Image (tube, rainbow, N blue to C red; front, side, top):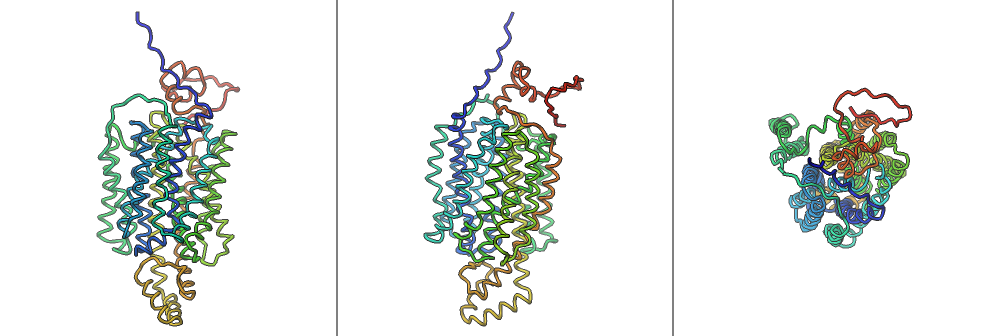
Length: 565
């Protein structure tokens, strides 16, 4: 007679101190990535001007990072379900910071774009793996308790980064913005190695979906290149458009076929059977457009429409960052205290709509108090929705697919931001080009140039070259005209985000209002493997998969836990 196999040992519950120690390296790693990104944001107009790039180059310097971040995020998420998550996180830090440092040596826009693309590969890993590792050590219900720490990191990097970048650009040279994160990266690698101890996971036979990676990259890249260049290098309705859009659709179709037949799909399409995952993806697309679009074009607005220096631009965008931080920290604490999440997401989506709509009305001379209010509302909307959409998905995801589920939402958020920035950038470039060529602007420009003599002629030649202007150094007569043109173009581009924000609100309204579990991902995985754990706690019962329609007697005292259909 053989004895029954013993149940798996339940992973020990981490104390508050152990969680803080584990989070220290994770927080520093995220700080490195955010600092390296935000320190450049306020100086990008100056960088593109010095590298003699135009509006399309400006858009692609941003889009290249977002594109590779979007494509690599599900890859990192899939790898996190197969390999050592701690080692992958350290690898992502290394790739990100080395590429960032290399970008500092760029001599032309093409080189800058190439290194920024490599930077995005590391950023995708940090975005995906940080969410997965948090799910391993912190339960969804307790996540808000630690959001203050992440909020502090966000505050230090998102407020301090642009300010530091502006000071470096104005006092030293913009290239040092790309080197400033190196010492923090070295420290992060050592601290992660020492403090981050994740539960051991069983080894799996692995296979990587290489065809899926290639097809996804081709599909998204073709679409973005088409959006960026259409209307300038070729007509919107042309043979080139047909070939590029057709190629993107063919690659997307083949990607779906490959994912359905792959043993280890890059993005398991079965995830879309979950109403929570599907609706969270739709809502995340709008959040991505608002988050990335605002960070890119608000910095341009401050420098090209209000004549601010990089340092001043960093200061002037603080209201948006304040809204994001206050909302994310405050809502995180409320979710942990009361266990309710849906009302905050709905309010966040409404604020996204309000902020995007109001920013589409700004002019070069709009009262800055109003602009600050609009930025604050948009930031608060992003803060309420961005991380909590991932939280909602992790709360209902299969523990074995926590990596691809988390990275799936992050992927579509990055993809939405990438496409949004490309479309907004293309709309901005087209609007500026049309306005600059209009009779009224040409007449005003001619009058201004004549009044300034040789100085005016030199500025006019610079504008004709197509390179991004440095507005703060222009003569006042021409500066007012350029500020007005770019303000109209940027406000026009913000209008594109409004319908997506409305779609996000609709998706959030229909999200299943599933209560947050108090179990970490590791505990849920253990509960699903051990019968005694699943039947001994109500939390464990929540991870069991239904096997049939078994009638159950209603119990008025039992908590109402709606199941997701």
